[in-house]
Structures are given as structure tokens and as C-alpha cells.
Length: 298
Length: 339
Image 1 (cartoon, each protein chain N blue to C red):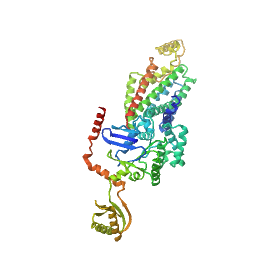
Image 2: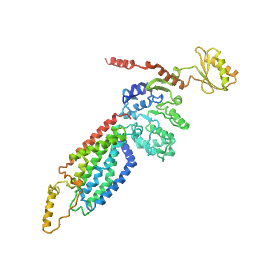
Image 3: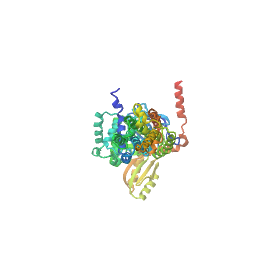
Image 4: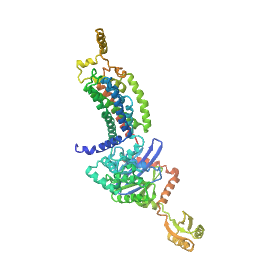
């Protein structure tokens, strides 16, 4: 059975490689890669001296979760079975001994790989530089290794979810333009509503605001690190500054975080809930896409 | 007789609005070269796509070598080499990359795949274009590559949809010769509306009209069924001489000459008269006239006549084409068998 595996998975691998090479040659991916490099460079250089590490990493991830790269990721998912590609697909691939499920899985995996590749090629080096560099703003705001890995994993899960939603819309609507319009008109208001209720499990906006907390979270919560997230720590700092001023000393330097990242402390952040909150809809989107594609005449 | 393709009451209705295939029953024997004829929009391509499992029938069924067709029937698609009309190919790939991809989709091992694709590229005359991207190919080159792709898995059944569409005469000749050659070792189905292609390659023919199969049988049966005794004469001379010839012929018993195409007259033979006698008589009249005989041919073997007559007859039948009983009777017979 195992010896048959290479032969059985041959179409899957072939479609995956074919789709990936097609994506790499597309202007969308190339333009996105260049744009994301530029944006990352600008964010890092303009905030290098002033922004603490956790908010800065969250700022780097902001475009992927909220705007504008989430739109690019949605578009990436759209392509496979809409418009003129459908004819080439049915003539070239699906008229061969390949199941529609094999095609969908390989195509979806190629899109997720392409989206994550762009994220990791640019963001991982940037996050490492920001986290490890001896910056003036990084002294009082250490991020943990676990926090960085968990944050990147969370963003990867959200990107996978967005690709899957685009994939589903591309199958449900025969026209690419209609699918894009539907995604924008439905997803963005829904996202805002979810954010209003601070549901980081479902809303990328809330999730992005919760990332600084996650970035500071250690693998095992000990008392020292727990104090970082202790409620009222800012009041204690203010009191210490007050006493310092009374004794003639200067108050401690306060790094000003961007307000967006300080709107909630998200102490009840649960990685498991986030994984379930995005993972289950991703699976649901894949199942629905497969069902719809099987019903479709090509 | 083992059947390569079988459909029973195959019906395809798009979105509850357009009837593409209408209660079509078809049997293609193994080893046949079957021509699926029909005007544009007759339902030929839809039928082929149902066989490939790209479309689901609204009613009825389709089988290939006894296996049911459908989206999951990969083993059926493994038996079919499909060439679509004007194949849409991935323009960013080179021919070798494209055939390599298709070979992997067909699960052909590397040791077989590589030599086969190189020999196929050689056979279709694309060896000199292997370093070019497909988007730079002409229509003829794309069709040749499509032909190579359909043969890659060495399938026992070839389904080619309008293989000569848009080809120049040399490429068309190549395609027709190839069909004849391939037909020696496998079943071939060619869907087309080009009658001469069918005439040159096929031994069986099915005629579709408005989604329905109005005739299916051997080429010989089709021509016999629509036998005509008329004769065409190709004459050089002026119109007045042809008119005089027609006038003199009308004085003979059972002969009528009418203008047909340019420089051609149609000799109609009345029932009961011998064709040989009429031909002898007409040739004598031509000999006595100022006309020069360039050619003589019988309309009896012209597929075009047979085809057009079939379409005309089908249209003339009007409401009589409504065949409520046959499916119901078969259903009743099947029920009786179960009882």
C-alpha cells in the first residue's frame, strides 16, 4: 500500500507544482511580494527608535490581518475555478484521470503555500531583527520566543482561513468580479461587527490588537512574567514616577505605544480558541467548496 | 458485440432552461471509427463532456467500456484520450512541461512517461518547437499538441471534438491520416460538422439534431437508407446549350435535367427506369450537343445529401418526433422482468 503512495499522489503533486509555478509567475504574487517588502521596511525604519517590540511586531503583522494584504490573500484564493480558467482546467486537467477533490486540495494547498511563503519570506526576518536587535525602545518590552512563534502561527492560520474563504467564494460565484464584490461587501462589515464584540477568535481586527499580549506571553506563565500583564501595572508605574518626582529624580522614560494596540489587554486570550475559531471555518469552507464543485458542470 | 460507448435516454438540461441533449440513445462498438455528426448546437460536445464526467446527465446514463461515467469515474477518464475543440492550453508552459504534467496526472511512471512524450512530440512534428512556450503556438500546433496529449496514456478510446477545426489543408490531412492510422488499434469517436472528414475516416456514424440522435449506424447503412438515383454532370459550355440539353432530355421518358451548381446539371431518374439506360441516353444527348463533359458523378454516395435529408426529415416529422412511449415501455418491461 505504501509503495503505491507515490503513484497515487502523483496527480496531487503535479497539480500542486503546476499551480504553484503559475502563481509564482502571476503579477499578483510578484507585486505583492515587492509591496510587502517595501511596507515592512518602512514600518521597521520609522518605528525603530520609538515603538516597543511587541506593538512593532503587531504593526508588521497588521497588513496581513486587517488591511490591505488580507484583500490580496482573498484574491489569491479566488482564481481556481472561475472565469476563463475553468475552460482550461476542464480541458487540460479534469478530463484526465483526476478527481475534483484532488484538484481542489492541490490547488488550495498551492495557494496557501504561496500566501504563507510571501508572509514568511518577508516577515520572519523582519520580526527576528526587531526582536533580537538592541533597540532603544526594546529594553522595557521583551517579547518571548513562544510569543513570536505563536503570533506567526496565528497569522498563518488566519491567512489560511482567508485563502479558504476566497476559495469558497470563487467556487460559489461563477464570476471573479462578483466573488470579489461579495467578499468585500460581506466580509468587511462582518469583521467590524466581530471586532465590536472583541471576538479575537473570529475578528482579525481584535486578533491584531491582542497580538502584543500574545507576544509577551511565555510558554509557562511564571510570576515574573505574569507581572508584565498584571492589571493595574500602569497605575503602579505612575505612582512610582510620582514618588520619584517628589524625591527629585526624573520619571522613567515612557514609550508611547500606538493607541490601536492598547485598546484592550486581551488577558483572556486563548490560543486554542483562536485555532478553533479560524480552523473550523477553514475546514467548513473547504468542505462546502468541494461539495459545490462536485455539483458543478464544467 | 462489446460496446465502447453506450448511452441510454441521455438527457442534459442546463439550468432548467436549455435542452442540450434530448433522450439520446447511442451505441458505439469497440474498434469502430464513429463519426458524431450534427450542426452547431446539436449537443455533440455536451455528449462528449458527459462521457468524460465533466457534466452530469439530467437523466439517463452513459457508460464507457461498461463503466458508468461521472465526476469520480477516474478509471473511465483513464480509458479516454480527449481532444477538445481549440484546446485551451497553459500558455506559460513548454510542450515537454505540459505533457510531463499530463503524464503525471495519468499516473504514468517516469520510465515510461519520458520516452513516450518525446516520441509523441516527434510523431506530431513538434520536436523543433520544444523550447517555445505554448502561447506562441499557432492553431495547428496547438491541435497537434492536443493530439499528443490525448495519446499520452495510450488509451483504448479516443474522443476528438472537431479535430480539424481551424486547421490548414496540410494539418487537416495530417489529422485525418492519423485518425485512420490510430483506428487500426483502438476505438475512435470524432465529433464534427465537417462531412468530408466523416466520409474519409469513419465506418460508423451518428447524426444529432437539436440534441437528439436521429440516425446511428454504419456509413453504408446511412447511404443505403437515403439512396438516390440522381446523377450529376459537370459540363463546359454556355447556358443556352445546357437549356437545350434539358429540353431535349425532357422529351425522353423518365429523364429530367435541372441546373444544379455552377457548370453542373442534375439528372433525375424516374422510378422504374434503369440508371444505366438513363446514363447512356443522357451521354448520347451531351455528345450531340455543343457541351463538353468534364465529369460525371452519382449523388448516391454523397454523405452531404444523406445528412441534409436526415435533418430535413427530422424537421418535417414535427410533433411525430415526440416519443412518449419508448422510455415508458422500456421502464414497464424492466419492471416486468423484476416481477
